Length: 110
Image (cartoon, rainbow, N blue to C red; front, top):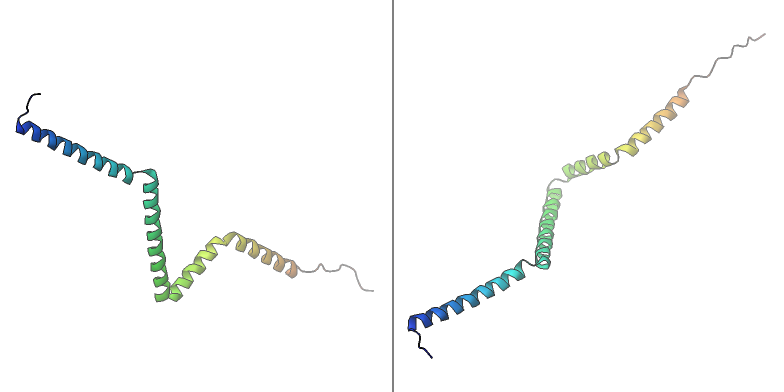
């Protein structure tokens, strides 16, 4: 058995240590970028952002209730615009029918 120089032995030991460290890093990276872990992290981020938005919305409504009511009313009117148009058409049709003048009788009274 040939004997290696101490520098070569140290280099082999260092290479083995670096290889083990690289494999450990690759394993941790593989775990971090797994689809399930990425989906979980995205879901948690979305939940946190949604909670922050909801909290900000509640604070805004608490600080300006009249403005918030106006915004909600405007959104409601926008979303209900078609049914409101239909209702307005029905109301105006009903008013026109009531206001139609009656036909005058052409008969002469004797």
